[in-house]
Image (tube, rainbow, N blue to C red; front, side, top):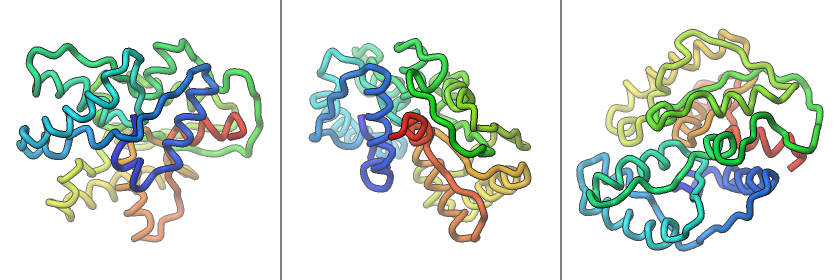
Length: 233
């Protein structure tokens, strides 16, 4: 399941996700009729509009008997935790965040699986998104990244702090959102990290926008891109 931000701004993450899943031995089915999961109207309290988006996604993606995988903990949380609120007789859908699926469903404990490749040492600051913690991720993304021998994960102050994005929050309360994000970036830059790796496009868009506007010397990547790079893709 692609996401709106992935479709509009992070197409390379969607491609990397497919490559990673295929390398793990999966056959990937992508329904081009899928649209938004409905999280923006749901969070705004417009549940009627959220049900329109949710209903379409259920018909196009969740109607399959196969597990659904998405490179976004945010959208996984919306479908898994909020659809049963919109439809009270609905069981929790079988949808997984990418690292969650690899570690717990495909039993992948380290990466890469079959191909070993050596790249220059990179100091990485890992950003744990709020929604990842919300659906119970316990460091699966970090585990896969850390298994790559050329990746050096660095610690930084207030590592669990939000990036300040919060969806519509960043548009409604722009100055507060930017302040939260800049504090996060200051702590990361002080750690000496070369790049920031995370698992949600909203967080990466927020941090990358602040990086560009302030000419900071650090870059962002989704962890799926890091895993795809490790297999030469």
